[in-house]
Amino acid sequence: MPRTARKTRRVTVVDNRPLALKIGSRIRQARLRAGQTQAELAKGRYTAAYISALELGHAKPSMAALAFIAERLGIPVREFVGDDDLGAIRLDADLLLASGDYQAALDRYRSLLERATDRRRRAEILRGMAEALCRLDQGGEAIRLAAEAQELFQAMHRPLDAADAGYWLAYGHFQQDNTTQARELLGGLLSGARAGIEPVPDFRFRVLMAIASVEMRDAEFHRAIDYMEEARGLTMNLDLRRQANLLSGLAMSYREAGDLEASVTTGVQSLALYRAAQMERDEASLAGSLALTYMQVGNLSRAEELLTSAAATLQRLGEPRLLAHTLESQAQVALARHDLEGADELVGRAIGLAQETDNFHALASARQTASRIAVERGNAAAAAENLEAALGVLREHGPRARLQEVLSQLADLRREEGDLIGA
Image 1: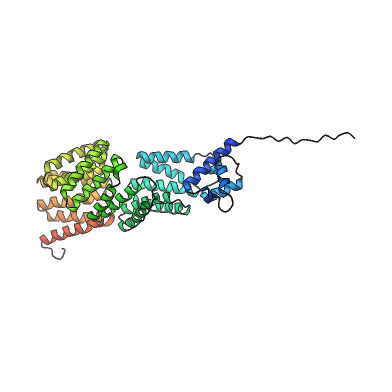
Image 2: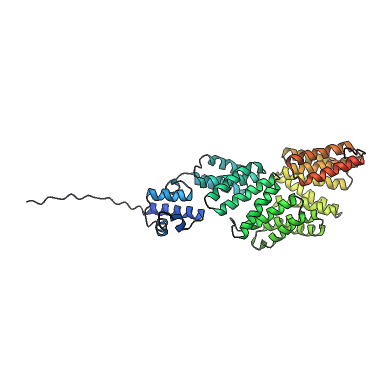
């Protein structure tokens, strides 16, 4: 019988090694971001060896495997196989945030949020938005976003990212004058940082400085100094800016605690570091604070010199919010020189800028200084009116620690005028 020819099935083999490598690399990056080992990722269905083979591109993953891994990492499958543009836009937003263009960064993050359908990407965008809002002094809006980001990161077992989100959550509460909540959150972050949970190398330093700021807000200046001195022990590997920020905070705390000599010493050191780092804005801000210390020790000429230079710098840089503080300090120096006309003009400008920029801290301070000028003029009614305006600002925006100070000033003023009931 004739031999029957057997049909041979031809199989076309396509080398998908480059695709496998690309997918494997994305799996590895996502796993490392989540802080998981290969064994933890594989647990329940696969082996660590299989995950390793996927990451190295030695094995081609099935859709079932990709779906399992994506679920474990809290991200969509398209993160491994897709080529959407969200990553590039997100990188652009991150760069804007890092460069200090906070409003532009916030706008970019907002455009991404509605397209972020997976937990990881949503959490990262929310964290970026929270930071941008805090940088823009809009802590009230940042609280909800940071809280959700922290919760999402915790659910994905990403403690480093959760700690970073928690920092901005505490920052938001601080800006809202919720010092008790901020202190509690920062205390937890400090314990974590001491145990090694530090999203960035200087995280412990940042947390210590933040707690010190909370203590300063509550007028606990000696406690603030203790935290800053602990932070000072971590400055060996820090850049000039962070070292300058630390010394600047110490200078302000020492002044409020009554140690004027230490305040001048650390303030001068901080100024030198800011100058070396070419940080004009921060240098000008500190100069205004240091000028008040010089005024307290009676060196009005040095105080005036520092403030004149700071005001010129802030005007050139277009910083009306900070300029409001400097003008108010200049008004104090003019008052100390008994230049009531000059003091009136300066404090009026300070009040105007503070109102325009919603700088409530500067506004309350300027109202207090305006009250002192009115007292010098013998105008008790105007003095009381300004103190009542300062009280209104502090009751609505804080800090609460200054409320008692202004209430005492108002009571003293009314007592001197014979208004014992009002006092």
